[in-house]
Image (cartoon, rainbow, N blue to C red; front, side, top):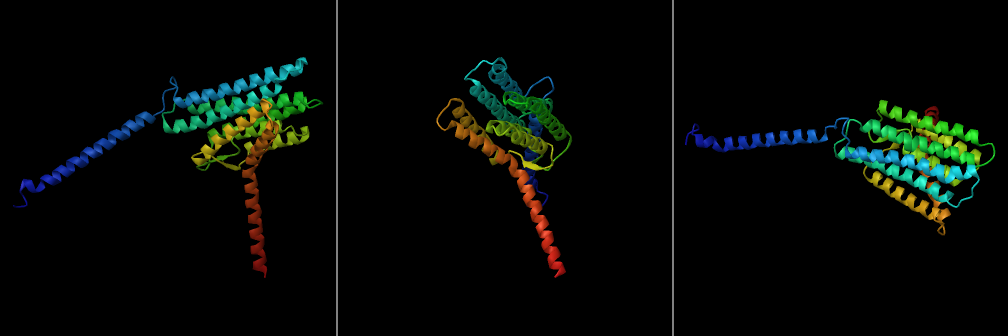
Length: 296
């Protein structure tokens, strides 16, 4: 058989045909994946957008529960035993809103998003994690007695403005992959509410809420809830709901569980800045040690 024999090249031609078919199939798969992941038009909502809208609804309902169950009875002087249940319902709704906020990002990364996704997310976060906790602070000041009403209103404005600035900065700047610059607004909102639920002296609580507002607009980096951290966040939200339920229904130990859960939430919020402080202190000590060794 000579080298010009067609049969000599038939296997090579077959291999080339198979490779070409595989390349075409890959291109078709890529085109299909791009089409499936292409954002929908503004006239259509994606599955992730439904979670985002659920977050906004939870924020509004939290304000409604706080008003009807806590503020109105206080203003009218009508004694009611539903204050605790209403407060627990409001906080639980914000926890559900946090779950929706967690899921809308996960779903948007897995499935098709819409052109409205980022804008809807910011607006929903403003309602649930800006307006709702600020309103919670105002009601806390009004029901605490004394001359705390105006001070609590000023502190609530600080919370609201911190969330507005944080969301605007998040839309305009790019942080390192895997981290948030500044405390995330859901964590900030839940930390503010945890401080109120701990019912500390008004001055101490006010300082804590102002500190949380400052952390939201700071450059302290917080890890994004992805992978195992997202699962841990979801578990923590469910546990917090259980503590709130035990407290609202008056179960034995419910108040203790609430105190422990709120304290842990505050501790988690402070973990990142404490790590930053520890790292800076370590750097200062290392520089001092280098200076001493250079002089010896």
